[in-house]
Image 1 (cartoon, rainbow, N blue to C red):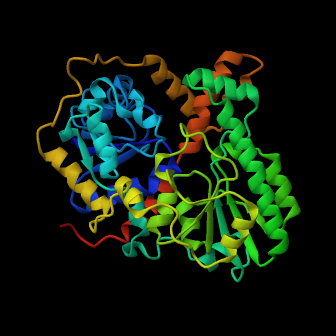
Image 2: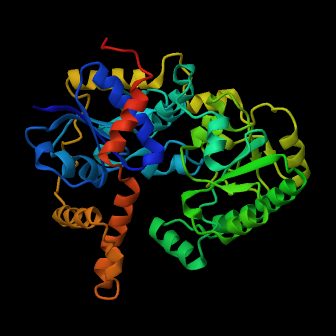
Image 3: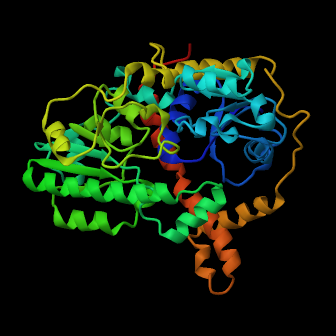
Length: 441
C-alpha cells in the first residue's frame, strides 16, 4: 500500500518536535506518514509497494539536492515539498544563488515562514505557485494550546541541580567558530569558497569579552543561575570549562531544545542566534550582547537595526532591570515569521494535503535534471549502519586504513547524532499528540 507522506530530517534538535507534530496532525486526518533520517539505509519498499506520493525534504537547493533527498530515497517523485529549515540568512547570503535555489529545485514546492522570504525567492526566479507562506511550525509550541509541553522552571532547575528560587539567566551562544584553530578555519573557507578568517576572529573576541562580563556579573550576583546554551561546535572549549570551574552559578547545559530553556528563563541573552524569533513568540524579551561588531555578510538580516548592548555596564543594568522592549521591531520579526492566528502546523498540513490530492504544481523530474543513483553511498550506508548497530566506530581503524576510517567515521558521526531509538520515537510522538484534538476532522 502506497505511503502518503515520507518526511526526511537532518537534525533532531532543529526539526524533530515539528515533524512529530506534523505527523500527528496528518495521521489524525487519516493520512499515512513516516519520518526517516536523510542518512538512513535506503529501502526497497520506498521505491516499490510503499513508495510515498509526497516526499517532504528538509532542504532543496539544487539538482544534487533532488538527487540526494528524493531520487536516492524513493526514485522518481514529482510531488516534492521543501520544509526549508534554513531561512534566516545574512543580507549577503540572501543574494547568493545557492540560498535562492538553482536548477530544477525551483520546481519543487518551497514553504516559507514569512512573506519576506517568499518575496526573496520569487525575486530570484522561484515561480509564485512554488513559494507558499505557512508560518514556522516550531513556533506553534509557544502557543497557549501547548501549555504544559515544556517543563516549568522549578522542574527544569531540579533536574539540573539549579536553585529554582534564584533568577534563571539563559545565554544562547552562536560562537561556532571560536573553538576552531587557523587550520580548521582555512579548510572550511576553502571548502565553502568564503573566507571565514575575520569572522572567526570576531567569534573569539566576542566570546572572550562575553565570558569576562559573565565572570564579573556572577561574582557580584550570587542570586543568579546562568545557563550557557553552547553552540554544537563549542563542545571542547577550555574557556567555558574554566569559568564553570570558577563560578558555581555558571552552568554549561546542552540538553533539551532551546525553546525549553527560553520558556523557563527569567532573563535571556543572545549574540546572533536566530532563536531570537522563538524568544519573541514566547512573549519574552532578550538582551542582544554585541561587545564587537559582526561582519554584515555573516549577521542574520533579522538583526539589522536591533538594539545592541556593547559594554559591561549596560549589560549589568539591563540584566538587573525589568523586561525591556524587544530589541527588534515587530514588523521585521513578523515579516520573516508570519504571526497568523491559525497555527503553522495546521496550515502546513492543509498544504500537504492539497499537494497529495491534486496534480503536481510543477515537475522537478523533467528537462534540466538527470537522475543518478549513488551506489557508493548506498553500500557505505549499509556498512556504517551495521557498525553503528554494534557500536563500532570506524575511526578505530585509522591506523590500518586511514582513508576509509575518515570517510566512514564522518558518516558514522552523523548517523549517531541523528539516531532516535524506536521506543523514544513512540514516546516523542505520544508527547506531542496529546496536545491535539481527539479524532479526525
